Image 1 (cartoon, rainbow, N blue to C red):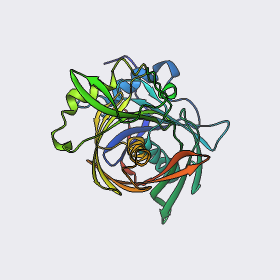
Image 2 (cartoon, rainbow, N blue to C red):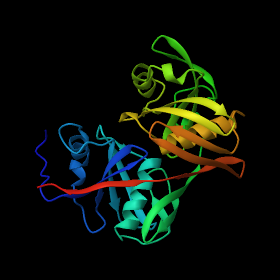
Image 3 (cartoon, rainbow, N blue to C red):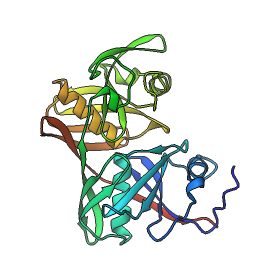
Length: 289
């Protein structure tokens, strides 16, 4: 373990459909030094030796929006955005009275995200997030490819051909449709696709089983975290991909190992965006002693 001083640091352990995070309030000042955030995240997320989590979320002041969202993966890398994470973030901000707004404009590295909060007796219950406009352009994924958009095309992965579609919803995703999701070797193909040479900044990976045109099952290998019970940006990406390929309707219920999310696609200026609706939960509050 590192030599980072943890004593006195307060945090909340939260999860969105089993995708779990350590959340730290830095709105009144920096709690973890900038040059220590990577190592801190690695240490805190290590299961069995510390709190254990898929990532660390920092709640920060913003100069341009209501508040700022930062997230570090379990491997210490900083991610642009996280769908389950931003719901946990919003619950923390609302329930801790940092901002008692039922509408939030949140600054992220993946652009501004707008959150609508439904509450009961002062406690937030449900979160609808405008995930913004997506892009399928390979240079925006980023992806090394000769085509402008990589749509249901073949990639050689660990000696086997897998069809992928790539999209960026503030962070990058690769989506593959399968008829046999229960037998997908995620430990093999997840990291192989995440770290494939055509993805210079790595990528999140999702395998999708279509139940009907408005209902799917989803399995995720998350960039920097590995297998996760849920992925909000992944669910959004999977529905956007399914809609673009003509496989899914605009409104889709996504079944993830940790629970369900509702995704609704919208069109704006001939581009596609989506709303994500789901819950988030506080597990416990803690303090390092």
